[in-house]
Length: 70
Image 1 (cartoon, rainbow, N blue to C red):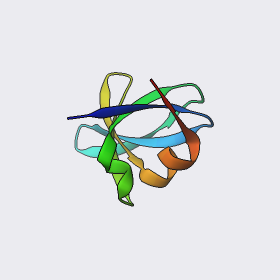
Image 2 (cartoon, rainbow, N blue to C red):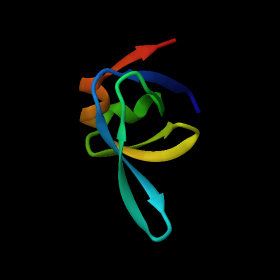
Image 3 (cartoon, helix red, strand yellow):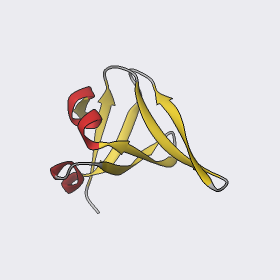
Image 4 (cartoon, one colour):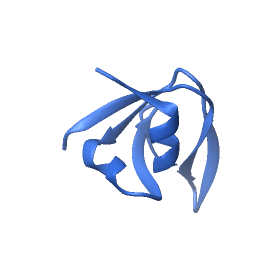
């Protein structure tokens, strides 16, 4: 699986699975999320790795608030 990393430029929401429900957490400006490269081609929610945890974020948020890093 080819991953791309993005530095978030302004706070946004990520959904994490906690117990039996998804809970919203704030991804802070400067945080890095990793995502499968092809995932940004779709709309809706996308699985990311953030702070060593799997989370869901809106694709539009990653596109508009993320800057790709190497």
